Length: 351
Image (cartoon, rainbow, N blue to C red; front, top):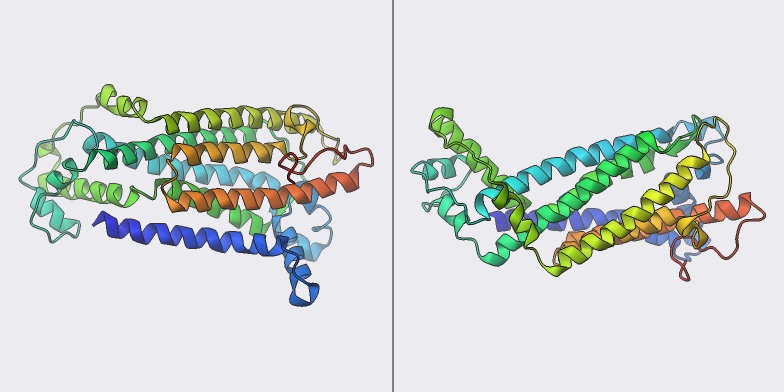
């Protein structure tokens, strides 16, 4: 049953990522102007513009109508925290209850509950979940681990947006970029959880149905054992810990780069810009984007690399941030005559 749900969810996520990636790739390709290449590039530049790169695009009142304040970045991380926390709690609860040796006794109400969640099978769903192979249990706990990394990421970005960055009152971003950000912070945690989310949802439906049948008084008490809650995470493979180390490395650099960018506008109400320096700024114009690539590379490695939506998620991160970095790099070169020509846009010696 959960296999059908998984097969439905993962292709939908892949299609969504492809739909988001293709316009960026098309805008970056040298398509002739006669074929609409220049128009596509201009449209994507306008859609992705924000802050300093959006200032020229929103100079006219007609274009300004399609922008929102850049401080709306906060909405992205609120949505990301809500989505990631919900998925993390649901899958962690499922992993704790059914993917550890601690398995509740089969209930005489299992058959009734299985009908309430849409199953016509006569076998017990409790027996089905408790008999899952070891590799599948490992996959579920690996998903919990990756969602914890995502939770750390969105919580940190939420804090930084509120306390580190000082957005100018005039800073704007295009409404399409705003909608893309909202889409991203829903689709990203869904992609990370896609391999076992359908079965976790099915299990929660089963628990709700059993509660309806039994009532609160006849439901067993839920006792949380910290050993079974955390030990499976500590017993994951080397790829998870290598991925976590890469994630931490990228996060530390992004924290530093964001602090540098935030300090440039601290206690300033003017629209004056200065050249950022320090940390990875010595190599690239957008080191916070480079750090984001490292962060999501860590998540990809920690996920085991077996889920196609996670690969498409990372491909979108690469294409989207690379395109935005190139635009920012060009803006720096045009704005500052003394801007270091040795810097690349996002990846040293590549672009």
